[in-house]
Image (tube, rainbow, N blue to C red):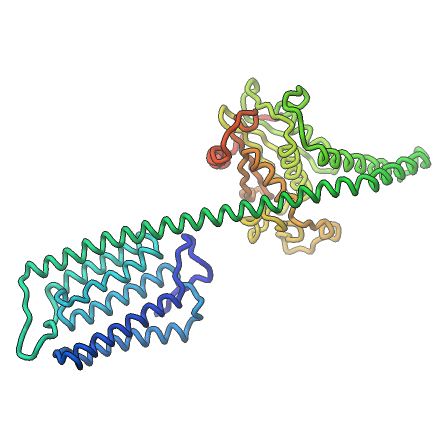
Length: 465
């Protein structure tokens, strides 16, 4: 029989190390051997010693086989762990059959494998093992060899006592199983909460460090950008009107000016929410974010889905401006011909989806996108060679991390996916509770909960902006 082993923890986060099960079984082998030896050679009770030692030796051989076949650090899958625990139950049932059945005081050891299951496996597996114990105990009440006792004497107890022992076993099994499961589940939830908190703190530490780097970069880059703008202006003045290099010089000048505007935003992240210029309808905000990217040969299509008389009005929050702008810019970088930016709103939520027709997200890293230093650049989805210009635009993976963190701070929830066939490309959905973007304070958890429901129902026939 082959045992399936997980190379990583199971999807429920519940798996048992091989070393743990092997050590527990060695403990059982030692206890069973000592008990049989004491009964047979110290108390001189009559029992089938050979058969008992054969069952104990079988467990020892199972342990040796597992040690030789698998590394001790290996983790068993739920199915393999259930099979091994079921074997432990059946091996103990065999010993109890040979030594008096329910009359044997060691029959309560049948609870031990179920307790291990309750602390390490899902409830369904524990119920299966519990049912196996109850069935085995029922059979042992009727079928078993006599309890080892003094020569010439047979210890017999009334059937009512056997029934009471059976009831005690079942009730103890039920109570301890539920208790162990609840305690282990609480420990798992606490561990998950601590892990999530550590991840959040790590992300916040990364972002705090990047805030300082951004301020330093804004200060240091100001002078060279001013020099570039000055040189570009002088070169443009020296060129003839029909010189073909004029377009390149003007593009260089406009892009250097754009860099200076970005640095200005970095150095003054505060805004006045009461200023009329700091609030605008969502379509106008999207138009402002996409306008600087319309000169790069990629068609940008803005769409809307929602009542015109209830358009959400966004404040010019730098976190929203930077986060959305970064996602739109990434889509344009990877798009082949077109990027679709779709806005949807209702009375409770606001959804923005950005979809491109590029290669899409790489399957091996889509779950990790949003972590620091994880990037899709340099990971082409197609087997064709990557053009030199494409290979040179590799990034550190910080842009999307910063954008995602800033947007989540505003109450948004982001989801990533690849577009369904026959369409191709990546799709990013950003969902806010409407109150969060229109100024009312609202917990981030509420926004994420409602956002998860909206992300799955993106509109299929939107109106053009």
